Image (cartoon, rainbow, N blue to C red):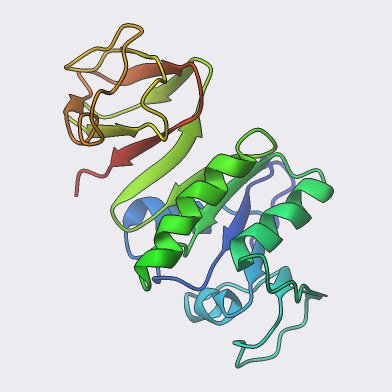
Length: 210
């Protein structure tokens, strides 16, 4: 069950039907959540971890159990479950989301997830937690807490995006990523924080130190 703690800041988890989380970082997010919004069969996976959904959104074709919570049918076949969930959250003025259960399984679904994050980055702040990394979309200067020697990757959807970083081993100063793999694993945190600024939206992957 969701722990009811009125003094705790609102922490909303949007839970998908992907891989069940096993990393301690993601488990910490779940244990500190104030509410769970599940997308279709994600409700069953969340329940297998000992939590109950507060809201379920989707066409409800992959749920095997019944739940005593708010059910919102969303049968638009032109939108993915993640997009349906984000649209509902935006309409209901939810500003921050932790995305869990959106990795693993089909590669095309994984690929689409990152572009959906990019599409809605202006409307809702999201952090995706997989079993290997945290993923966010950033544009204006953003500061991050980190662990020394943590591997950071930056992927730009457009080769003309200018990127500036601080406190990373290979700093960038209003520079473009000239080839698609340039920002993969080449940026290592040198301390307990770093920053990234970009002229347009980019993906930032903070890889876990297992």
